[in-house]
Image (cartoon, rainbow, N blue to C red; front, side, top):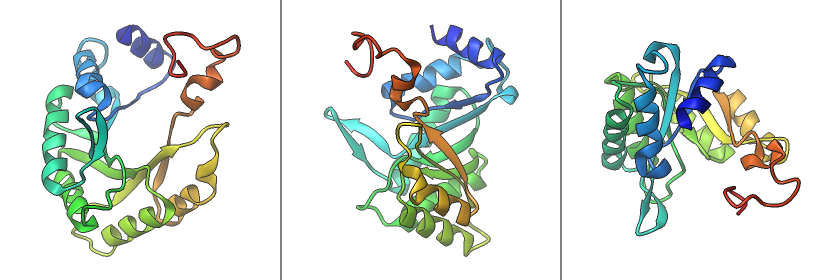
Length: 199
């Protein structure tokens, strides 16, 4: 099914695969990695993944320490079967980890070629500004290039400050859940399908 969906996506002109280290406990990355070389060439697609979130004893936790992030990235690259990702993002803000420690992992990924571009995801406007400013103030640091947040016709909260913060800091904005977690596909018009997110 994943191969059929990916084939239809590519034939329709799509080229960006967005995933994260904890999606399906790594299986999402394994599936994408399995399609490289069989369904598409690595150089023909853009692959983005995220780190910092994981399930521990069934609960979603955040650990943006340098050690955890670098370990996660190396595992992601192994699952994807590639030497680099095009975009590597920190999945969520971590109030328990100093921001400089988190950003140092982005620097390492960028300078070692494991990530061509780096960014953040699910940050608030002030968090975006703080992280981007820290990186921009030192030419030896990896520049943040992307911000990813939920954005759709049904959830436009990113318009309140996130898009403005992204623009002001010179960052590209990537929307996640642009189909409102499936609601905008129309599949909920006549009830809740048993295999849907809503169920």
